[in-house]
Image 1 (tube, rainbow, N blue to C red):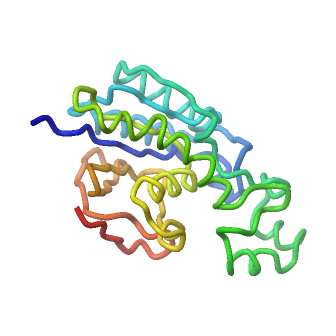
Image 2 (cartoon, rainbow, N blue to C red):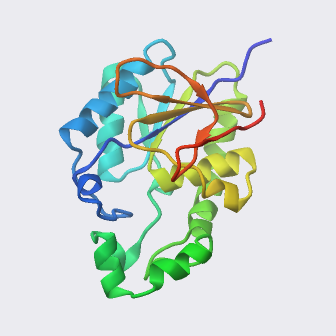
Length: 223
């Protein structure tokens, strides 16, 4: 009996605004040299299990990352706007200090209910989850159910990848919001088993579970 293909989840490579700790959301900044190397490292790590398709966010930082990977592996790329990062509205392009100056107390209020409280003129986690729901049912699940197809690689953003994983695994919102994905971390989803690996060092040692957003602890998902 053929096994279902795996899903790989990559975040875009490091950007200039990541370095400056500015909120990006629906806006963009270029990949740094390190970000380009991270994209190449993802491609190198998948040479033994080349994906059949790269499904990517159309935002520039994810688009560039996907192009580097697709070119290295000779894999077609499709862009889907539903993979765009959670929009942060008027806060995009600002540092957290600038956000606090513009909206005193907002971040503390949002921390108490991040699933429902929206960024000023932006989205919340629930909006992003609603947006990703159709993508999971229309594109991701059918691809993973087709044993004859190869693996699927998604190139997205930290928050949108969080809600995609949460939706795919049926996690509660509180658990979904604990997932983290640094620029150099690759996820592999095989059924209900989730592993992660760091791709900066040229190796690929898979570790069971998902990274917790702040403390780097591991969240285990039952196989």
